[in-house]
Image (cartoon, rainbow, N blue to C red):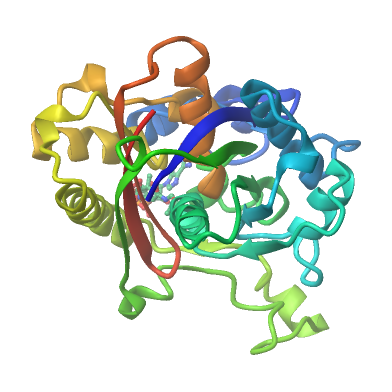
Length: 325
Ligand code: ACO
């Protein structure tokens, strides 16, 4: 595609919440959460923090890492499942706070696969000659939409944002292979019943708690590994690369058991898989760019490394991008 990542950035809320703290307000335990999910802590937005402010910080850090300014950005893509408002998209607020003027922006909803979809779209935009640089942000404030009385879901998620700046480059570097997929037969595995035009907000929907995220956990678990594997293999095929040539794999950070099962089935050495879900929990569309930024900043992922990003999410959507840093 001739588009490469030239800067990464991430931002987490200040407040870190342990499993033990959660167990003080919902019927759960540190032992249950660690054993079933591997999650130990998550970062949650505090009273004064706005969801899109995290996204703005992540974008600024990605631009700074790339040595670029906001004026250099030709397009802003914001992948998020739960925008600040139903209308306009969160990208409007991020663009406003970044000080973008005249630059196009849009939200992209593809659940936890949103960042992977967004990165692929950004690469295609550059390859089509429509721009030189695209800022891709994955951002989520799930603490504002989970039911804090439902122990089956509330322990799983965290808030956060991660961004990359994608820039025109040569065809031997950057994005080398893409696979974007979907299986709409599983559309209701993860969903929020009310609040959209199909079922607008009313007293009845609020009383029935239909504005909270609902999830069929075992269905998600069963689908996740085969879908991420299929997407990864398709992206590698498109890139003419073998699994052995990959230096780092960054799977969607939903659950350590899913990541372990994925690595085991594919025979991937654990030391080549980036994992941070134990500390930040599942941040949905933000999970991959946050993990990528951590691994770039601590020196694990270096220029020239081959990296595969693979995700699945509500829809269900799934996909992977194979790239060279
Ligand atoms: N603390 C204590 N007990 C709990 C909790 C909790 N937080 N949550 C559920 N339980 C109980 C249930 O009530 C149930 O009790 P019961 O037998 O008395 O009814 C028991 O634990 C077993 O519940 P299951 O749902 O069968 O537990 P399971 O082993 O399947 O684990 C989990 C649940 C962790 C959600 C698992 O299904 C899973 O990992 N699924 C994948 C979901 C996921 O990762 N989603 C991320 C969002 S999707 C995405 O990112 C794309």
